[in-house]
Length: 117
Image (cartoon, rainbow, N blue to C red; front, top):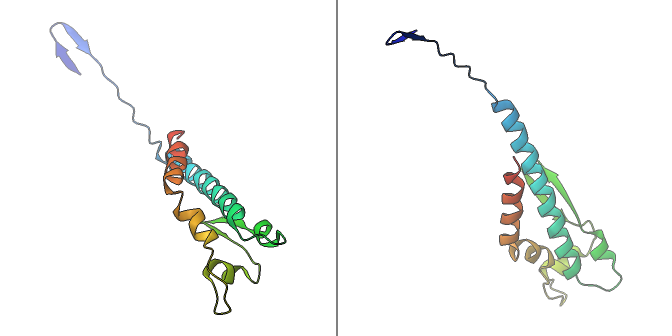
């Protein structure tokens, strides 16, 4: 209790630890950003994949694991199309370019997701 002239002043302070809720909200925001970036990269990769039958383009997926997202495909000839081969296939880099050429967009997706926390 403090004495300010003739008045007694009582001050009570209550501190609440909301860090578990904040951490949970951040984790949700990160997962939301990872999913959005993966989906966007999958879309770019699908549009830029070599197209003959549509099998490669349609097979591209994305998946979140921990604090990362992975885009890819299980099509047998996908690596040869991405990286090229000794059999005369020139590299197309449809997966690499889907990530590397849109980094500013992925940064904005992350900022937007975290802004809602």
